[in-house]
Image (tube, rainbow, N blue to C red; front, top):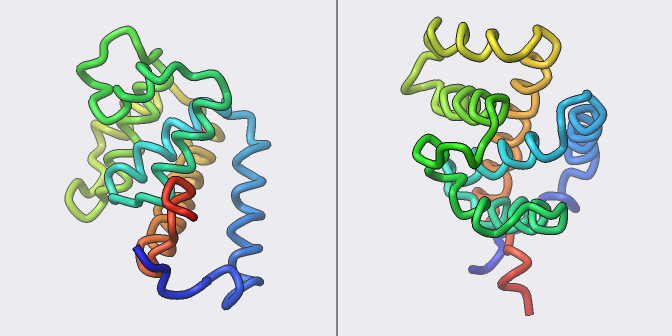
Length: 150
């Protein structure tokens, strides 16, 4: 895969703004593992090789077992491998990421709101929106995953 352009160099102020939101999410109080699992799942849905590679590496560095990582894409069938908050966050991430298909139904909102407080759910949705935006940048401009760099 050949990168089409370096969007970080082309729009440094815009990417810095994304970075500020990323920093906000990191300090929001949501567990880092939960955020990284959500980022990975969104990237899987969107087919973003760059972000899948990056978030998989981040989770492995944080001590998440590879076996656990392999099950993110099929988390619903993975039973006890994901706790209640992780399952709720992954479900919310999927429906919000697929907003054009799902319309984010009331049932999905009620399920997420039963597990997360208002600030947590708002911050989680900010994280979901941010990762969808990052995925669109990386996919559009063919960001090269670290695994494929020479």
